Image (cartoon, rainbow, N blue to C red; front, side):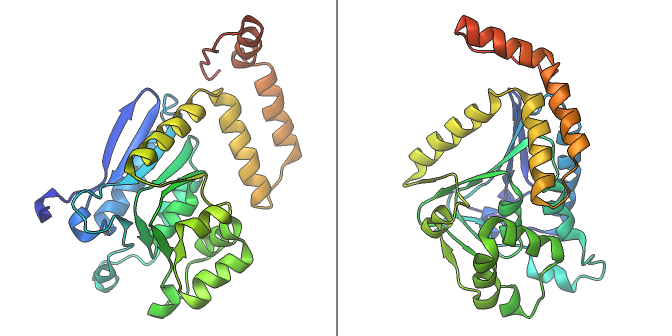
Length: 261
C-alpha cells in the first residue's frame, strides 16, 4: 500500500445509490482540507440530483494492519496558515441535512472528528472489532456545538459525557447496545451482505415519502417541529403518484415501481 494510492474520496453512482469512499488508507483515511472541500461540493451535487435516493459513506481499508475507517482530521492542518477553524464542522452539518437517506458503512475504527461523520448519517452498520473514540479533551479542545448536539442525540447525554469526559473508546458492541448501529457484522463478508440488504431495503421505499418523513423526523429531533409543514408533507404524499402506485402494487401483490412524484 503506497502513498500514491491516496486521493480525495471516490464517488460511485449506480441505480440511485451514491457511494463515497474515503481513500487515504496509508494514512488511516485521515481527513485533509482537500477532502473536506471535496465532500462539501459532492454533498451539494448529490443533494441536487433527484435520482440519488441513498448515500453510502465508507472507507478504503485494504492493506491496513487493522481496519481504520478514519483517524479523523489531519492534526497538522490545525497549524496551516490558511486553516479555517470552522471548515470541518460544515461537513457533518451538510451530511446531516442531505435529502437522500445516508448510511455509514463503518468498516473500521473511527477517531476524532470523523466520528461526527458517522453520527451525522441516518443509519449505521458496523464491523466487529472496530471502535469509536473522541479524544478532543485529551488534546485540549472544546468540540464545536453541532457535533456535541449530535453526540447527545445519537448516544444520549450519558454516552456523550462518557465520550468527551473520559476519552475512552466505545467498542462496536457497545454502540450496537446503545442503538447507534443498525447491525453489527462478524466479518467482512457478512458486513457486505448486511450493507447490501440495508441499502436495498431503503432504496425500494417510496422516495418522496421517505425524504419528507426524514425531514420531519429531523425537525422533531432538533426541537423545530412545524405542524403545518408536516401536514403539508402528509398531504403531498397522500396525493402523490407514488402513493397510488403503492396501493395498486399492494392489491396486485407485486413490487411497486416508485418514481418519486
